[in-house]
Image 1: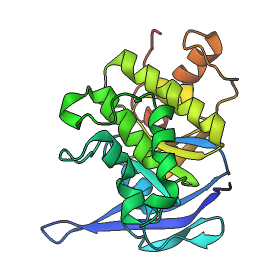
Image 2: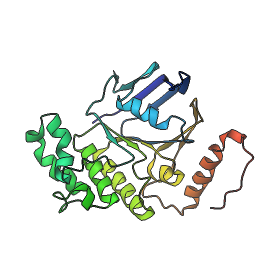
Image 3: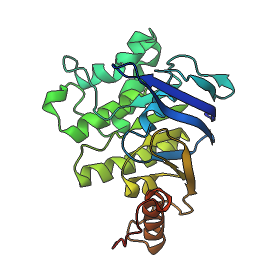
Length: 259
């Protein structure tokens, strides 16, 4: 499996209800290697989720282009799985049918039926496949959402703050599940997060974006072996360095962070 994403000079603009034009992204250039985990982090409203939706093919750039393995992205495709902030499960379907939904929509369910059970097992939901979303915890629903995103065997998994609404312990457990799945499948993963700790724990590189109109301020390579201990002094150094970079290059007086 490959999954190299190349973003070249991407510009994205929106028009407000008052007719004003807003530039969300202004000349974004980024190469994401096959099998790499990259986190996008920056201030709220800077365009992180917009960039993720461009990669998904849900919206389209006003300038530049994005390619997956040299093919330009022009529409949504099963090669790019998407996990949203909320689980987005269909409440009228049980967990099994939610996970199988995409396969049925693509008319490949009969050939891929065993994959549904495999991915329900993979995310630890065996025994809950006949349950409905309202019967499960938020963390279990996010696990089901992860299985649904993975069951089509995408080259790239896109994660738009998928763990932000979860409690700290559930969040850390699912972070470990994501790392385990990535290791087993060597899948390219791109995540939007506001959580510096989460970005360092999961990522090979952390891409720091500026306020709108967004550009890439800095890319930080995380040179730590997995599994990573959050209390490790080197981990804390990355934490402090990224917080300082998020301080917008000195536009705000420097602060002391007690970690």
